Length: 193
Image (cartoon, rainbow, N blue to C red; front, side, top):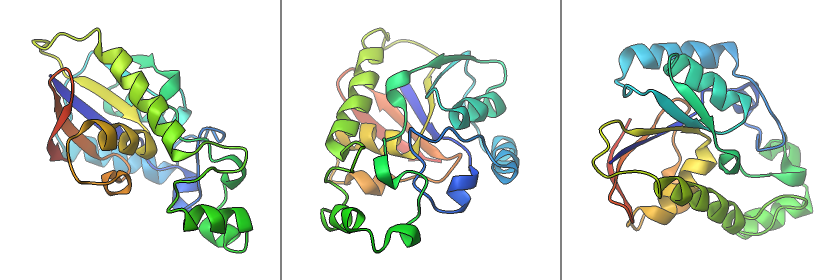
């Protein structure tokens, strides 16, 4: 079964290179909307009658632009990571913050004050994907389409694609993503788009 993972369009926080997680429910910025329209015209996104989305506005708005006729199925557990005290702040804002420096020293694996750690976040997203996949039929003609966050995509693919590619190497730009094949137990990467 084909699975598309698409990252939401740009937000004001993305333009400012801020950590925008599950606590900041930003809409797309005008530049983000325009880029998505251009990508829709230039790329071949699949036809879809339903799209799985994070409940965050940036994902729902992206899905409405890319798949205007599709039903949006909101998956609460596919929200972006909770960045706790790092939320809506940039690297420059925090370079003297001891908690932030400790997190960087841990290769961004450690806990975030008042937020999630990467392991818990990855487990949450992967569990949500696997729970949905239980109801899919392998011969299903229509692909499953997810419009979610960059972190959500990194979490699921780093766990379910057999590869030496680490978590952060699954990063994708806004409006872009991955096409995978799901065989019922693992994902196989077909292409990046």
